[in-house]
Each structure stands twice: as C-alpha cells, then as structure tokens.
Image (cartoon, rainbow, N blue to C red):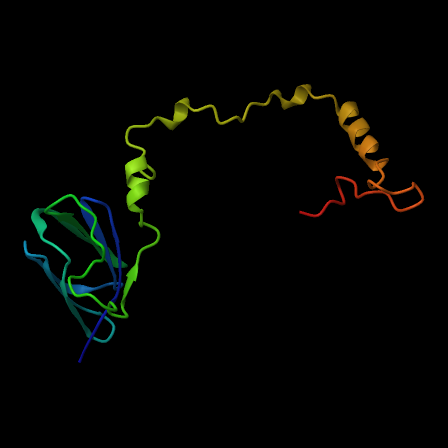
Length: 175
C-alpha cells in the first residue's frame, strides 16, 4: 500500500518551489520531464511505507536548471519554468487539488509583489541602514518626563464638569 506525503508549493514568475515533507526518507526517486510530468517515490524508514505521487504540472519546465535537495526532514525541489510567467495553479487539471497538496505560505509571493520587488532584497546592504540603537537616550532629563506624566494626571474628560472622575492617565490607558 502506498501513501501520499504532505506536499507544499509556492511560485514565482520563473520557478516553482515544491517541498515534500517526509522525515528521514530513503530510496528517494524524483523524475521531472520537460513537459511538466513529475513523479516522486520514497520510503519512510520506520515502517517501510511507500510514499508516491504523480503530478502533471501546469506547463512545461526546464529540467536542466531545476534542482533538488534531500534533507533530513523534507525534500525540496526548485523547478525552473520553461517560460517566465505566472501559473494560475500548480497542476494542469482544473478542479480541487489533492488533499495532501497545500500552498506554502512561508514562500508564497503574489504576482504584484514580485513586480514591486517585495521579498527580493538582491544585493541590499542592511548595515548601511540607520536602524537606531544609539545610546544617546541618556541625555533625556528624567524630571521633564515626570512633569509630563503629572500634567496628564490632571486632565479631566472632555465635557465633564470637574466633579466626575478624571480621564485615564497614560499608565491606565488600554490598547
């Protein structure tokens, strides 16, 4: 009897990320064809259960530029698309995808996000950004902070006649 491993996918205009979650998989076989046909099989080491699936991807792929990595907890496959365009779905067949196939929201990027460059930081040098962290905050006069808090404590709710409870102070304010 064979089973299907939990599988996640995400895409960019030029590639598809496929992550097959099968810890300690052995006898892993991956077969990707240019027309988009993708076969997977492996065994779980604990009970020798065979895991198998066969996908017909939405469009043609570039097999030579696609890469696979078998890690201890999962098998990752970076599938290079033959044409740089967004697919409306992963599989060629319309309809509901198999229950073991899910979207990988950690890697997902919308088409308009890619156009704007979100998630792709390229050669950006983050060390040149002024992210604060200076210790110049010691120059603040603590007495001025105390006066500001005391002034807020004397504030009365707008529209009150003074005999009602005062407005909440900064310490009592609720988010």
